[in-house]
Image (cartoon, rainbow, N blue to C red; front, top):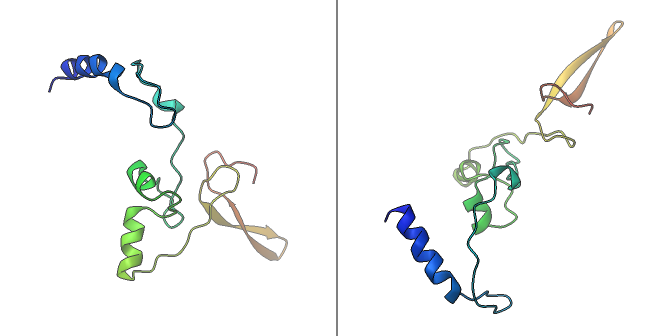
Length: 116
């Protein structure tokens, strides 16, 4: 069906729909919200990729993406990644040389790095 026709059919039928929460009859039709207004989906704790909105709707509170869940079910081990608590970028191990001593610390991997 053409989008224009679908819009007109929905607009004509919108007054007949009722809100499931309050029972108020009639829906309003307006332009879509800008994509920037939608919150960013959470990142997978295994790979850091965003979890799909469909998966989040089906399984609220899920912490791994579909690909990582498939790997977990198959028994393929992937190391957990750590992420910056400030900006969410993956953490990197960095060497800090102090005289003859070298320390290794976790630092933010974002570009430019945040002050974590």
